[in-house]
Amino acid sequence: MAGALVTTNVVSTLCAMGLATLRDRLALVLVANREYERMITGATRFSTVNVAVPAAVASRVVAPNVIPPAVTAVTPTSVPITLSQWYESPFAMDDKGVAQVDNGIVPMQAKEAIKSLANTIEDYLWTLLTTGTAAVAAIGNSAGTAGTTPFGTGLDDFLAADKVLNDNLADSEDRYMIINTAAKASAMGLRAIQDASFRANSGPNSLISGEIGNVLGARWLMSQRVPNHTNGTLGAGTTVTGINAIGATTIALSGGASGTILAGDIVRFGATSAYTYNVVSSVGGGTPSSVVIAYPGLIAATAGAEAVSISTASVIAAHNILIQKNCLAFAMAPLLDTVEVPGATLQAVAIDEVSGLSLRLEVTRQHRQVQWAFDALYGGAVIRPQIACWLLG
Image (cartoon, rainbow, N blue to C red):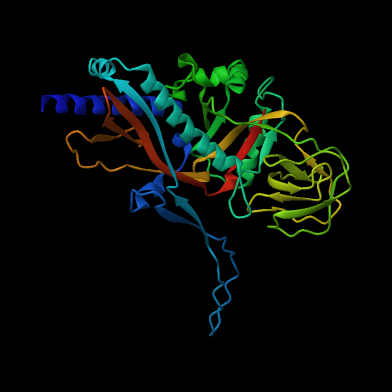
């Protein structure tokens, strides 16, 4: 009984250690809307909740009459959030390692397992924002210059991204600027950032503690997991073929310009167009004949002959992002304990009060060692892609 009690205490200790490390490594999970999490009725894989996205309603003049006018029909859409991601990070520990944990010493292997799971969750959330299909949204708005780290001389790039969110009616609250290490280094050298960070209302995350904090209506966060993308090589000369209505996702091209358009490129139709789109795929290698852009497709119709361009061909672009909370939804379900059987598996579950992350540690006794495995069950979806904007770097 005493041995079982010690093992159970070790499990609980490692769970608590795991959650602390996991929380410190995440950025997007702190940004995403998690209000839908409680609507998921089961903790099994593929449990789903459909999030309704209301349709726009037009106003009209009131005209009194004996016959009331017909009610205009609207068709709301929905986006499913499915717990499709179930990952684990297992490792083995001998009896000496177990004793060290019980004495408060965290084994290095446990830290690596936790780091692996944390990075998997973070990368999954970034993938939701960067990858789209004909029915799944991805972020198409962009500002900044691909291949050039923002904030070298000022905050103009941030202001351009902020304008995009304002134009798309994003709430002024709960905005987050997530940047990579290079962008943070540039931003922290700006006097405008330093002045804002020294203000008392910047909160605990200020320049004094090495964080930018709240600046110009957004909370600035740094993440080492900000993705990079190598752009295609498309040159000048390609144009849009024919008329394409608002909402179209497959756009025919002509002109025969050399080069490629790759999935993940940010494409613009028309040199003066205010809109950019995330590329899902293209047809034709050296001379693309069509391109598929992410749902919800064209924001403005094309008339034909618009020049097609991608953001700075052939460079590696960092995808920093300005995002409003309601753009991205994330859900994580606590995995249930199993019945403890002597000589078999022990499990413990802890829920972090700060971030709400749920992490299970499962322990299985083997020959003179113990297998430990952290696992997590989660899912997410892009709900409103229009209220986020890439800040290219």
